[in-house]
Amino acid sequence: MIEQKLSIDQLPAEIKLAFQELKVIKHLNDAGFKKKFGFTCATLFRIIFVLLFQQKNWFRLLESPQGTNYPGKDAVYRFLNHSGYAWRRFLTLLSHETVHRMEHLTSDKRETAFIFDDSMFERNRSKAVEMLARFKDHATGAYYKGFRMLTMGWTDGHSFVPIDFALLSSNNSSINGIADGIDKRSSGYKRRKEALQSAPDNIAAMLDRAMAAGLSASYVLMDSWFTHAPLIQEMRNRELHVIGMVKNDRKRYLVDGHRICLNSLYSLAARIEGKNRHILRQIRTELAPGIPVMVVFVRHRSKKKEWLAILSTDLTLSASDIIRIYRMRWEIEVFFKCAKSLLRLQKEFQGRSYDLLISHTTIVFARYILLAWQHRQSTDQRTIGGLFYLLCDEVGTIDWVVALQQLVELMNEVATNVGKRISKLIHRQLHDWIAGLPSYIKVYLPISSCES
Image (cartoon, rainbow, N blue to C red; front, side, top):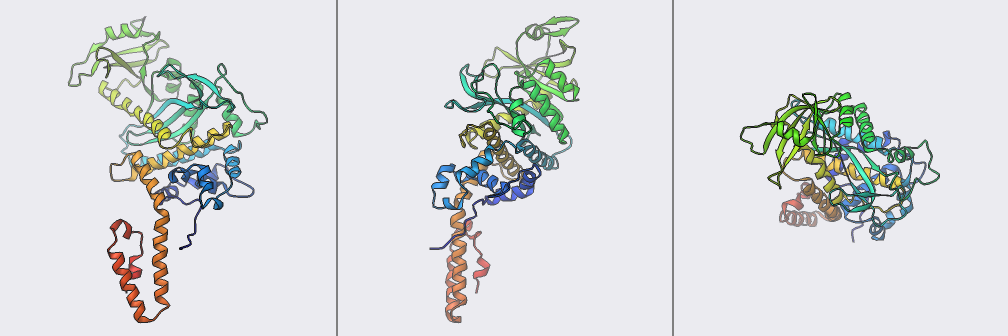
């Protein structure tokens, strides 16, 4: 039996390289993650980070033969439940590092965008989770227990990087409130207070933090739930242009001094003649507060007799450019799907503390950032999901790779301690055996050391 030395926080080879390139542990230390005794924060972070790629939960990992090498359950949960750690600062540093590296791979003429959207963060089976609230899913009309995960991301149309998020609770439909005994000076308490603020207030704060950190973009992309005049004005005050879907509600537009609805605006809009039959009309108008905008009407994909309206504050763009840039907003929908389906958002840890929800969500975002960076660097056409499964397979092969390498080293060591004739025989047999192996196994073995 070959005795294998197990590194409890070992990372897949590709992710280990990305960890070093993006300076993940340095950013963790710069954000103030420190412990006085026991396993370091860096070790605990790496263990939790790689847990997903081992395709095990924490309970199964501790029950495995290597479970005695890992820190106890209490150590991990104390780390995740700590209210003093600045998880937002860590995510900001990591995302800024990644965006800065991606910008060097992108032409200066390429449009970039900040994207805002929210998604369900469900905890339907929970009763005692801190700040738990009841929300309505506007897509299905059903109610769920949990939070609204308001997310800000950056994209250049090729890669998406999550920058910031807030798990929003509710004052009106709250089930549980803030737990007692939270230090009001801590980062955790500040996250709890912002969870009770409105989404527009959080969006403005996220923008300010991102711009203060040195992040920039050409546009802000939003769906119809956020494209309202007060929030658009906040963006324009920060010299950012907005492109967003417009809801057909009681919003009014100014045309020749008259306030009209969206249906009336469509009737006044000029028809667009061209090759793209899906772009119907466009018109220059103003929102009721006096914000000049261009509104483009496009054909509804599934309901051919209906239309959708997209608004842009950049009046220099053509209708096709507005549609092309707004299409980049789909990147955040892909991110939500990947985070929930592949990266175990909402599912990996089932704690009751609001701090645990924040810390684990940040780790999931960090996983996606590293996958996005790996995808950006790769020369093939692998998707984020394909890269994820490839890394899971790689972690599963680490044990046999190490065993094969140690087997070759053992044979070489035996050959050096016997006579010259037997040594040549061992080296020749070992070399012939390695030569007959598949190429994907050969790359892991020190073939040159086996040559006689």
